[in-house]
Length: 308
Length: 268
Image 1 (cartoon, helix red, strand yellow):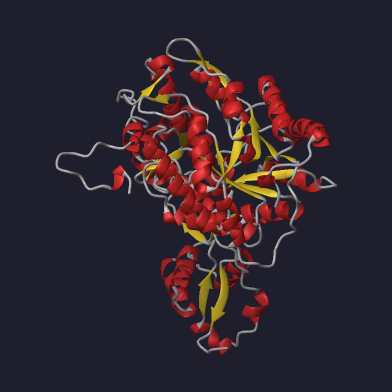
Image 2: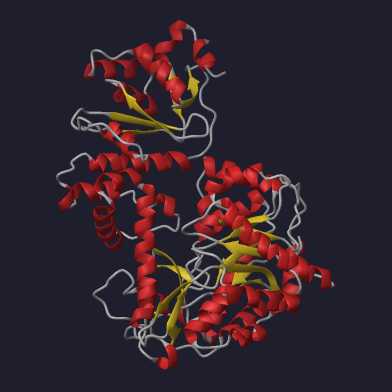
């Protein structure tokens, strides 16, 4: 916690260019350009939107116009997808510079990245690739998080991955690895409950046990999403984190359990492929909001990381 | 300092997990890396193939979204085969996917199975330029009133500053008509494919606009964009196209937002 406050204090006071909408206790959705008209037509404006940072790293044009208009009316969550924080090589300084510029420009309520990597040398693989959990990778990833947090002058939320393979070299449990990363770097956590369910099924552990072991006190955002079902080499079920459909019933149940333990936390419904009409995506977010509201009535306070 | 940073102590350094894991992602001939396992340490070929599929298919989809007219012309199956070759041979060098596919038009030009569609590469060049234009920096286009205020005796020496979003694609084929006919899902009439057409791609307000340049227009604008004075650009255009229409081209370039400011040689 100390590291977080140190980072927050070092932020120089400045004038906000956008309204400081609170994100506490809200549900949100991925922002897709095809929904822009429908979103802007909604009155009153409600909920938050999450954008993939890389889609807004062009110099100008319609993407920035769209994000500016969404940001005027809503809190925005800036979600980085390809910083390669979990990779063995150094963070790409140019990419980090672009990321920091977006944080400065759009004043997002939340900033997050993944415990994964996507670039090796100069090749970008456009997927969230896994890493072994060892003392060596722990030290390296903690350094990467420090570097990102120093560049943007605020803590990030680090997202737990969905994975399809284990590394033979791993010596730590994922929850221990993540807890220690948060302790060393002062980062918050983005708990992707669909990822927990997907990984638990794929690797034969209990999602409930994982959540009991997860440092819920550091969670500043929750992700929900749909997944697809396949089978592995031994014909065991293998779930794919596809983000192309509604949230599964089992994931809704886990969501309710998590909120019962830590109160309402900003919650995003991700939908990135086979994108439905706005009304369908909005209905998913409203379902999440209803569960958040139930827990808000009983919770004494939200997470530290959830408030601006 | 971590082990990966230490200089090699004789012999070869053990490759890191990034090198090992990524080695077979784009190469279906390579075996599954031995560093990964499934349940209880069992083989994980199908599991590793999830990553292979994610990488290759998502990059093929990225190309399809950047080059929709090319995909409509070739059909989905043909496009996917061509895109798969390209993705494996030329994966992205940047995490910014909207910059991907800059070398795809050249790849199409050399692609054996696309030889019967000689204009396909130029259509791809227009689509790639369209996305560059879409993401380019914002700037206010030159207003007609500013041009109209220039004294006649200064016109010949005028120099123009190009808008960051302007692109020109020249083609020996009817690339602009073919692009326009295939960019949307509309039914199209037969197009004569071998009338040379040059494309002007600009973003005068919020949206990208693709125009078919008249004879001499591409030479004229290219010279101006390079910084030649107006008189030099006009001479160059007339040399390649004696029918070059200066007043129509000037009106067109203002309307299209090709330039942002003018410099008549006198500091303002």
